[in-house]
Length: 226
Ligand code: AP5
Image 1 (tube, rainbow, N blue to C red):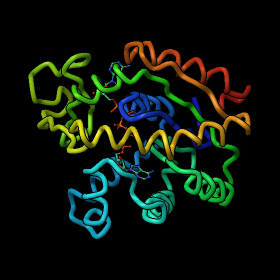
Image 2: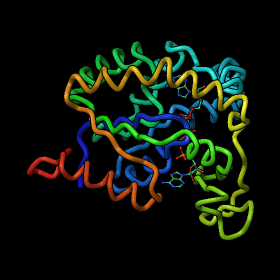
Image 3: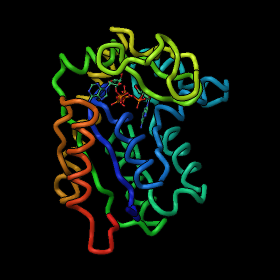
Image 4: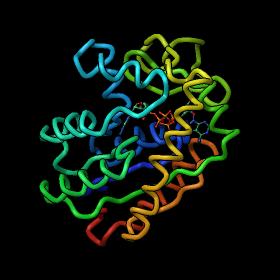
């Protein structure tokens, strides 16, 4: 399978975008660009960007567009993005989407392919409350739905599992408000262009992965490219 364009995974916090983006990136052999992971890495390394982003992320608000766009543009300069890329958590505002259009054009990519994850609020709150992430490789677990074999330890690399600071109930509330106000309008932005696909994300990781695979397969051209 080959990917010659940008995939964008949209959807509310906890919908399973990161979980499916990791699997899809492995399948298509393209990088998974999670702006949330990139920011958390900047926070952990104590960079200037991390210092600015940390308090904003902890309260559940969005980091300013210009900081995000500079970070994404820098990442896209790396040659591993030439065959395509999966964006997870980006774009998140209309100005980010408009700038991304210009960037993709510059890199010779066609229209992005957008998948919008749908999930009811009760399920996403449960998913966020139960999420644990590997501090080494970033593998995502859930104590209710997808527990590790040994509590607190990653099955893949033995890394310590940690909970995200923004999965506290107060921060989750703010993240949902930011999603409704600033990110949800992106559905119409892309729907109008005919590059938009909806995905019901309440089933198991495997079933959602299968449904996503079917969407992607239907979109593939005769040459196997998306
Ligand atoms: P970010 O890291 O992007 O977080 P998010 O979009 O809120 O999404 P999440 O990572 O919480 O959820 P997800 O949909 O990836 O779900 P996951 O697969 O982990 O952003 C964090 C912060 O960074 C933002 O609040 C903002 O401050 C800043 N930021 C990032 N990008 C930005 C941007 N572009 N502009 C401005 N600011 C930005 O799954 C969740 C849980 O459910 C896991 O435990 C998982 O195991 C489980 N699970 C997943 N799928 C299933 C399933 N099918 N069945 C059962 N359990 C499942």
